Length: 144
Image (cartoon, rainbow, N blue to C red; front, side, top):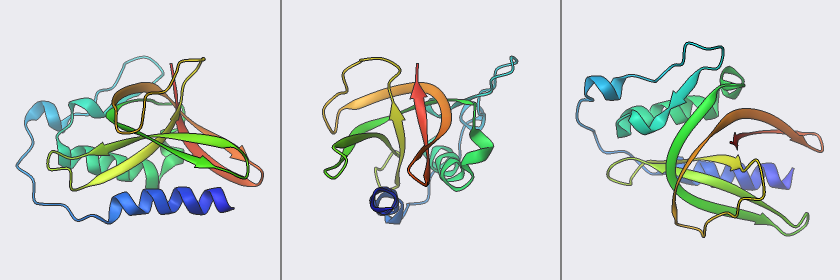
């Protein structure tokens, strides 16, 4: 429960910062890429700042709608360490062009890939999944 509260506070902190009105998106920025195969790809890297913010907000608000889809995102890597369980959680914090509107998505690498230092720019691509810890349910991108 404490991890849930900490993660929710972390995400809430980044969503509290107000956004400045953004310019109109171009045609390429209006699209969310999709693959014709069975796995839909949500490529956040091709969207403008307003669309990225809206899509990440939707992912956080309706996570079950994104299960099994491939998410491509870029942002800054940050960690949250829980001392009681000695577990470190990794997040990509996605910001808009003016760095005023930030949201984070948890991710995990598929192998023993070393994680970058906090504040380092990263691009992560992987499958959006649900996992449980105890009785709590969480969502993350399982990177390829």
